[in-house]
Image 1: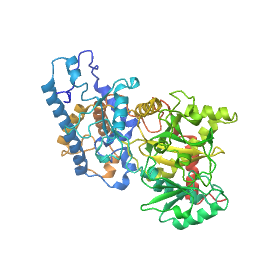
Image 2: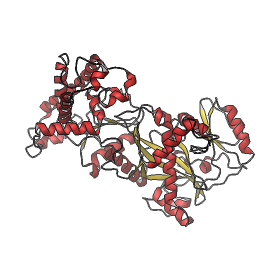
Image 3: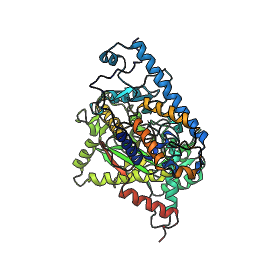
Image 4: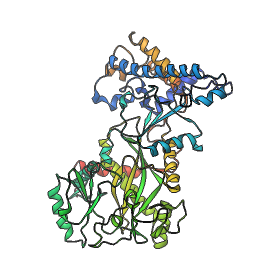
Length: 560
């Protein structure tokens, strides 16, 4: 049948990798443990590197270890049975024929995309299976067969409904469980506001002013009234942006000029309008930037060189007549596409741009910087980029202690940033799932490149599912024996586990060497082998400086 999953193709003599010696397997396992202690959580989430990090979770028992291992054993044993059954049913007797049915095997890089949005499924699948830089290494995990979480990479639009503790540490999921502390508008305002308030009256006052003044309603209504009146005394047009706390794509957003306009039936945030924005050819714009976080504890983050400027369709003017005009004041692409311009026709400062430079209501960052430098020869692109990187890092430092360590997670965030006329960047919001729609060639070019570079940088680790089942078989069978191999000793005290004898560690290394035949997972903080268009933000000297300021103000040491 055309939709039937395809069994693994039989390897030919040319395809078979040369057999590794026991010494090579042991050395490979040692490299894996040295590079990434989290790989030991194949046997228990508290083992090796986890012992110190998760000490608060309590002492693991032998029953805990066996239960988690048994769950993994069942999942991967079932994977092996299903693939063996389909190989028997659909086998055509030669490698070429098998490849036409299923071009994968137990050690293949499998991915799964779970999303109700077809644009997400389409772009991720397209990049993984067709991008030449990914070398055709990826195979979609067959669905509808109960194979569950036996993939290398899971990509979802919304938060995945999975138990991260049941994953192998080298499996990759594109969301952190508690990243809402960064991406929900109210949580971001609360976390940034906490550090901003701590700096008041200190030598660091204003250091964490990364967002315009923001108030959470209904609880901050009295504070909003006071700020509204104070701002009205100094601003000719006192505009504010009101938006629901959990919405995206411009839904429910409005511009308010009077307190009487602040009405709501659900929690909202009200954010001060940046009154004098930097303009592009007389039009307001903001930036959509892509930030990849591969670890929150410790922080490891990257920013991509590609992105968009989102340009308003109507010229900017701050008058009483256009105070509520969304096509002047709000730059969200989902709003501006209804701004009245002819479909496919470029307008204002975008006129004359080539297809790879501008389309719809957006232009590339390269086009933007070139246009701004042409309008003002003193415009310093590198200085602006440095201030934006500092802004992104400060926002991440504000929330890094709110998102726990999760070895299996990474996340691509969409940062919305606006520049004022003094070139100071302001963070408007952070999106958990930035739009992946490809509405024109510019969209496709930038977004496909970003997805490809995310996969190359994260570099999910290949693992041998057959070898994994064999390891579980042996360890579960011997788990009731007297102290011996690996972490499954009868003594489950924390002290015993911390004092593993070298033979135990070597036993773990041998097993990992068999399960992880490829390159060792990258240690957090080490430069990635293939960063693509990403530039590392943290760890860095700037990150260290921002953390020192945070520690100083949190300890009350910012006075003077």
